Image 1 (tube, one colour):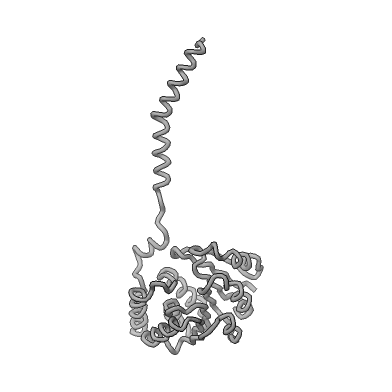
Image 2 (image 1 turned 90 degrees about the vertical axis):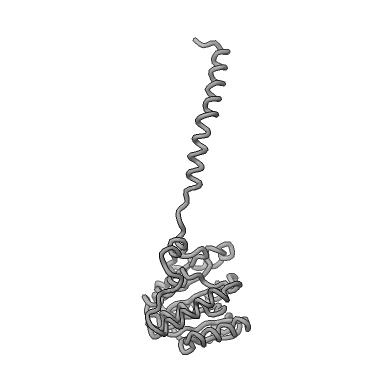
Amino acid sequence: MMSAKVKSVFLAGAMLVFAAIILPLCTQESGRGQSRSFPRAEEVSRRWLTRHPRPRDEAEKQIIAVMDDMQDNQARGMGNVLPEDGRLMRMLTESLEAKHVVEIGTANGYSAMWFCLALRETGGRLTTHEIDPKRIAMAKKNFQRAGVKQLVTLVEGDAHETIKNLRSPIDILLLDAEKEGFCDYLKKLLPRVRKGGLIIAHDSSGQAHMMDEYFKAITENRDLETVLVDASRWGMCISRKMQ
């Protein structure tokens, strides 16, 4: 049998071996696990897809040329959706054959352009709301340049008040204004959203910490089915009105 002194020496030696050999291996494995990262959907999209869709006709070519210019020269400070989000919005709009899209937060009109690409196919219209005079002026100019004025109704003023005048059923509602106002917009406009219609809340991942009340409102509403989609780093919360 080992004496207590021999046992002590043996254990000390074993611990030194563990520290010298085993721990570095564990650290390496841990490092490998931490360094392994899967590409984001946005990264994959930007590797394989063009920034904007290839135009299907001359009218789309004009719209997309303006969209390119807006992204290159006007995007800073606008809080625009990213192209990955825009692609999804366009696809949803065409898939639903939307006739009336409502947007809260026009900014310079970039997200509206994505809707217009779809609405040309569905025969629908966009009603977009903006309060900032400078952004209103930019959006009007961009709609003119893109040749989509006939598809867009730009409502100026505080959307919390101006949306009360909406009467037509809504197929898709985009919330892309101040996050603290989302619950009020939802309360006032949900009755106008048709059965099967969509409510899209932009920047639901990028500013999720500001949207607790909105998330609570949609998840507690049994008439809504919701999914969170991170097509881009900003994310979108998409709710479908079931009843």
